[in-house]
Amino acid sequence: MDELLERAVDAAPGEEAMDGTALRGSSFDYLALPGTDLAAKAQAFHQWAQTRVHHGVFPYAKRLGGRPGATAELTLLDGQRHAGLNFSSQEYLSLARHPQVAAAAQAAMARYGVHSAGSTALAGNVEEAVALEAELGELLRMPEVLLFPTGWAAGFGAIKGLVRETDHVVMDQLAHNCLHEGARAATPNIHLHRHLDMEHVARLLQRVRQRDPHNGILLVTEGCFSMDADAPDLRRLQALAREHGALLMVDVAHDLGCMGPGGGGQLALQGVLGQVDLVMGSFSKTFASNGGFVACHDRAIKEYLRFYAAPNTFSNALSPVQVAIIRACVGIVRSCEGQQRRDRLMHAILGLRSALTEQGITVLGQPSPIVPVLLGQDAVARVACREMSQAGLLANLVEYPAVSLNSARLRMQVMADHTPALCQTAARIVADSLQRARLLTGTLN
Image (cartoon, rainbow, N blue to C red; front, side, top):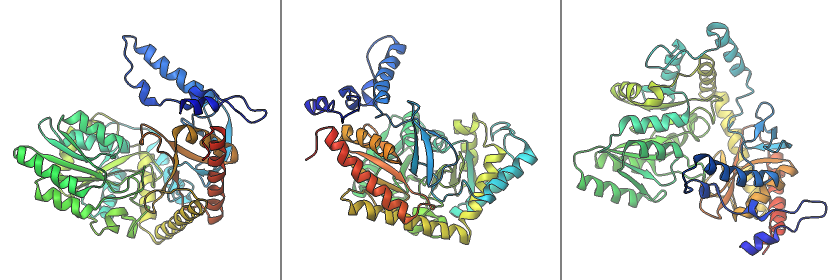
């Protein structure tokens, strides 16, 4: 592999030779460097990252030049601007441009001004936040909802707020970072099960309960996993949780509102809406705002989290403008228009997956707003992503350690406003860019 990377210096006429360093290594290499100088550790990472930036193969920390839509303009860290088809924004139902959403934000500013006045444990809530909690409860068929400043804070806070040092967390190994971080902060008793392996879940729960009949167990999963676009058997997980005296928490960040009957996501698709113990999620994928929530059936759990989930207790509440935006989006999600937008979104999802497959590209998972496109070797993926940006396709690269080594992929995020023609064009750009990247890195089969 090192020899192949060195051969990546062979650039096309007029192009600057590629430094092999830009195609080697990962951020994981700089996570636990030895030494006493903390700043030096940061400098080592920065130098590696800047080498990638210099060669156009560090597609992170992009800046959006306007409202996220089916097309957009993004500025990279090196200052280059790329305009084109936008499959990189979390805007699944295309509500950021909706006139009702904008009007709701303006009305909130006129009434409340622009502020965030404190945590929900003090005086940070506004009346509309209580209404939003009730409306979310109706959507989820769960009467108790607590809002958080971000989705990450909701996932972390729910686990850290409920779980104590002697308790246990049983969790899918591919669960979101906020869930892993919350578990590590709460207890040393973390038991990871193989991705979507129900038999492994059953064995772990049985083993934990047999060894410790006295402490709590929180079983954690996602409704739609964002790197692989797949889903667990939620009914089976809930049954296993009850069998072993555990609570089940499902993260619905990527499916609530944009999938399923009435926008109920995988919970509705699997017929368990309102039947699981705990649900947490984020507003940033479908509901056009920062923010997150935890929903449950028990008022005591809600109030317990208000005071023991630190991201809620010690962070300011959602601003009135954010609350108004989310309420407007929830209203649309639950309306006939919301179903029409979900239908358009699924049409675009199926169109993109089909177009990519026709181009010989491997697409992972099942239809969802996330379309994971397998690129393979990390070095090839970095160059391919650069080529896509230059060809007018904006999509997010995911590489090790977020996924397995040399299993790099695009996480293409589809919107209701993506048309079949845009999806066909995107697929052609992916195929052409991947072929060119293989040539440039000398790895074409």
